[in-house]
Image: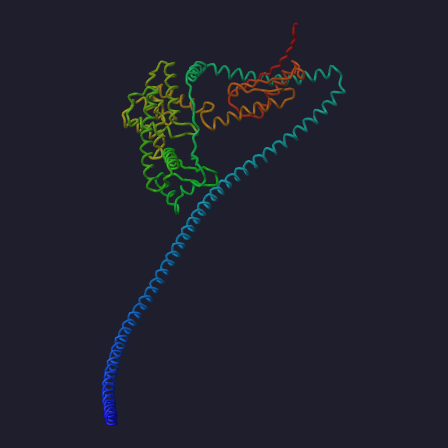
Length: 536
């Protein structure tokens, strides 16, 4: 039992030892395995660390490149922003410079306008100085007359004082002697008037013929000027007409040859030029530009060329119509076109084409009264001023130019002589030449034909009425027959029939002393008394 136990114990110890040995071996194996695993893990960790290091380096390179790219992008963005700002500043500078140039051009134009106004004011000042000098002279004359009148009044006062001491018979003798002296003066004037009347009777037949011819003509006239006014829809259109840096207005003036005046006149532009044809082209072109709204050099050039052709066509039509009106159907087409240019030509405010038609009709009527060739007289009268259509293009007077044109187109010698002699440059060789000269003078001299004549005519009528109205007892007065007669209406309560004769005499003397006039002026004083009653 004991042995069994000892054996069991030994077996147990042996088993224990074997277990310890096996455990030690197993532990050593495990330790070796653990060391092997640790080494493997370390190697893996080293490889992992190496890979991570490489990856970190790659990522660092990538980040560095990205950082460099971002830096470049920022630099490019800054450069682009700087370029944009530079362009914006340059654009603002150019706009400012353009505005400054436009302002400078406007200031230059304003300065030119002011210069022109200054010249106008200077001329007006000179005119006012001249008028002031004339007024001063008239004042001096009036002062002298007042002194003379004062002296006369003193003499009359002394005479009246002397007469007051005279008897009735003596005073009567003095008055009769003075009246006789005054009547002697009037008798002398009547004798002179009678002599003039007798002289005028010799030309009575000629005057009757001229009067008859004038009464058969009904004509009018158009007062032309050297400027045309174009109305604008608003003042903003003036800037568009001027254009950027003034290019539109420069192009317009260069193509038309007409000055464009843009001043403070509201909604209006003035075209100034002495050539009426170019001025008409400019006026039509500007009105079309304003209506169209497209104002630029190319459009201006297009419209100027179009209107120049239209005016050329109208000139031919005017000439053909005028030739047809006076019966000159066989006139050369070139002469008709040249005559059409006279529609845009004026002489002292009288339209030359209308004047030529009027002269043709007058010459024809005069020729008919005198038994001459009416058609030839009309033709000569129609062509007498043809040289005025070209006198600004060809050297020489309009008479010389017209004579050469008539010779060039082989006109009748009578027509050539009428043109050459209508101003007395050569001797007339035919009665028709004399009639054309007379018709020319009649057309130019009639009241209202020319601006100078109508001004003098109206002034003479006004002076006649003012002189008559200045007398006491006169109610009103009327100038009649182109200033050849003045009719004075008097107040019957203030003037008797006897005083009417004295009034007519005083008015006559006042007119003779204060006015210059051709021929005679008839003074008619009318005193009318009306008595009205009603039967019931």
